[in-house]
Image (tube, rainbow, N blue to C red; front, side, top):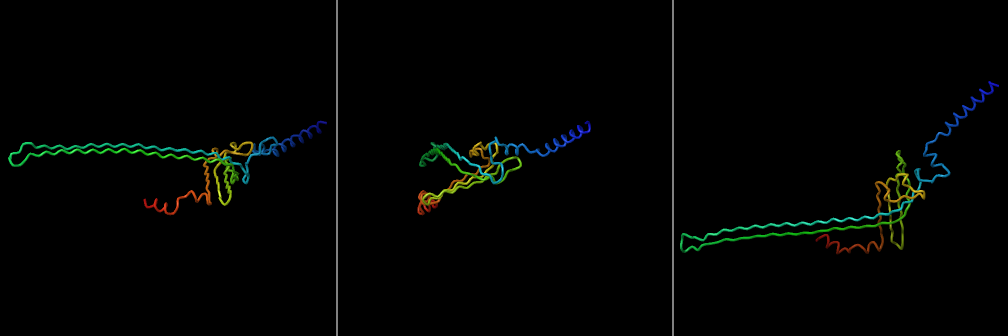
Length: 195
């Protein structure tokens, strides 16, 4: 009986050792494969939805004032020669300059698009890249985005706000008749170039 008990105890120890070794996974794998966890984009090739919410505002104001006053006085009233008249010299010069300038710029971009995870870095950061092209009545609008996303910033709906993207480069451009209509004509461009 003691021999059977020691064999069964040895078998149990071996089963436990192999069971622990076989189930050794990283915490990231356990969370990613869990039935109850949110599926987040952790792998290269996964898709993340980007909610672009960008507001920019900048103002630059300059005031400059310069003042300069100069005067020169010379007077000679006594003359030793009777037929040479006395002379006087008086000169005043004043210079005033005031300048003011203000530059104001404001921009707003709101959109929603998807991006692909191009690389998962060793520290867990996700490199993303996305391009969205929209053609409406011959007017082509293109939005591109690149940057780095922390996996914890990706919500349970697999979305991330653009202001949570590090080193983000967001570009929005258009081509077509409406875009060309907003540009000055060739004569206005030549005139502005000359003057």
